[in-house]
Length: 90
Image (tube, rainbow, N blue to C red; front, top):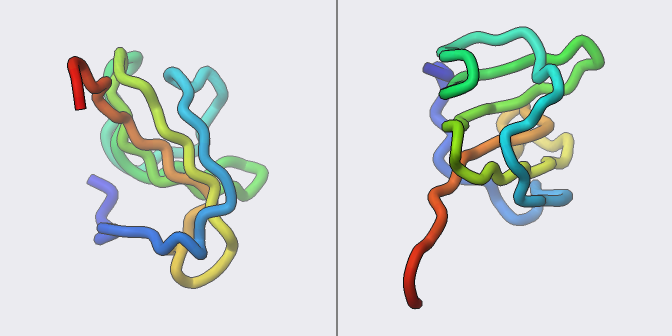
């Protein structure tokens, strides 16, 4: 849906990261899939210039990764990725 191949990000491209819930802010103009309140998958470009690659599912924690403005970041400023909660041990 994002029409991009982006399998990994080198550690040198990561500026900050945080675990959050479903973001309430406007993510930007979208290219991709959006099922309101359930799933967002694709790219978003905010009017302030922030470029995001988004793969989120409601009810799952979201990992927000802020990237450096370098070629290895794939042209994005942020990644917003849902992660399943781990249950149980190890």
